[in-house]
Length: 118
Image (tube, rainbow, N blue to C red; front, top):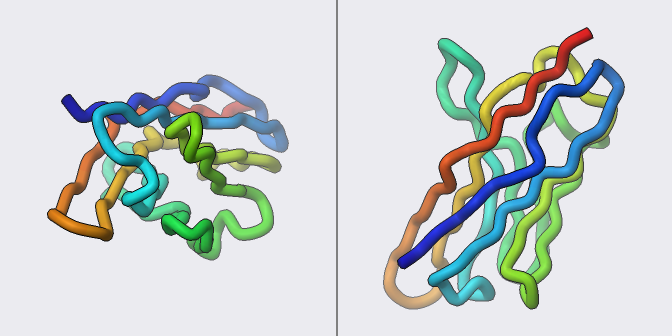
């Protein structure tokens, strides 16, 4: 059974930091590109950051220089370090795994709420 389980969300003041984690099970983690998405109320889900199997990263412009995506293959976990948080970063953050070798497989986590508020 494949599971992606996010954690680390919460309430933080503007300018603060949070570190999200996404622990994978039931997959060969090294075969997957991983990504973080977010969805604010009334909006479409938005791609925030991606990290390939080889560790290449990419970010949406609005988070460049503030967020860092990373992965630990041994722990089957992908992280999103979020610094200098802004009110507009408030959203539910989702982890996604996309298998890029062999049979196609796309999996989503259940999401974790991040609220930036003063």
